[in-house]
Amino acid sequence: MMSIRMNNDINEQSLSEYLGNRLRTLMNEHTDHLATGNIKDFSDYKRMVGIIEGLALAEREMLDWIEQHTRQ
Image (cartoon, rainbow, N blue to C red; front, side, top):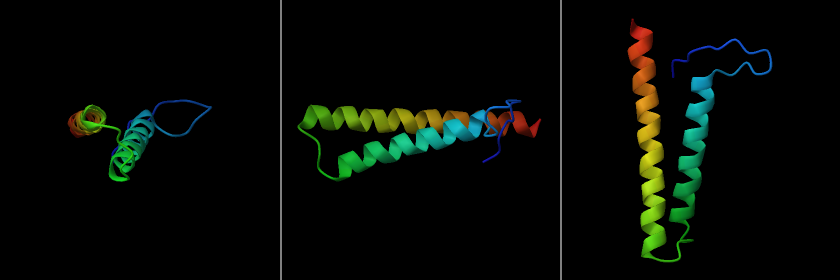
């Protein structure tokens, strides 16, 4: 993943790396929750699937933005 570096003495990790890792971690956690059968009912299932879909969309938008702005 291409990253956009920010000057920050506290943390060397770029914002794009942090967000990419965080989005992927959240997606994995919600997917694991879904896969292990910890869903109470269909409403809970729909909510989990919606969260996973939203996280995947956010990740894709971020990656597209990075690609578009690093090619220029």
